[in-house]
Image (cartoon, one colour):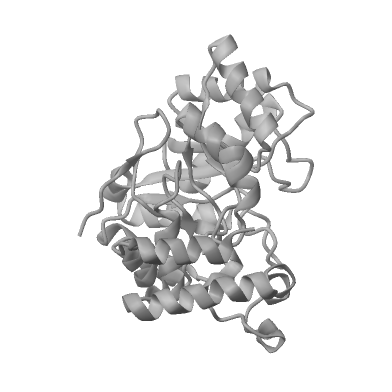
Length: 320
């Protein structure tokens, strides 16, 4: 099986229509399962994998770098697969011991640490995980450009930037002829629409920036498994899901997903991802899986075609 690839911004990177979120590696997926997930992902014709240096520092006993290290072990086990994947990682989140932010010196240290953990000579997409207002954008983009020139990085992207700051970054790149962000990772899904669609979507469309949105399934809410307060204990993300999404509007969206899922013989999560693939500027939504059944469902989502009736139903239910 193969899927049509999409250009990531104006870069030469060609990515599959869905990006595997590597936050689960070493967390909810152990080494053996992580290897199986990656093998299945590539075997299904997908090529895009996203991680970060900080994954999974939030787990007791972890220090960060666990996800990258597992990907590195997988690549060493099957070296030929390095050329089959577009590998993305990030820098900037707090790694402890003062290792945080986007100071040029730290970026250079962090990229070398990521390369070592990933056991590769280059990173396809290197992203700033957070904005760092304390460092001039010229310095950040200049340093990232140096990494491209050195062959350590092929393209750069940003995550968690406001529309104002992202627009400023694009302007700085053009004005000073520096490397520019070719991708953006914002929060965006069928529930979380307003901020992205009002401010960031038109900016990305205008500038040809590829969007790889996170929380494609709203922390699992759009799978349909969180419907009552009693569902809170089904997942570690339960409390957050309940507080953010379990309300009249959220239940209205689930009802629309239920209807579409029945009509199309698909899962609610598959409908939610298929909806994202129809949206302007979206290059590859990011979604995670902790087992092979979940992963196969993600892949099926990319095979779905949503008819006008379904799209209208979903758009109406999720309108704010």
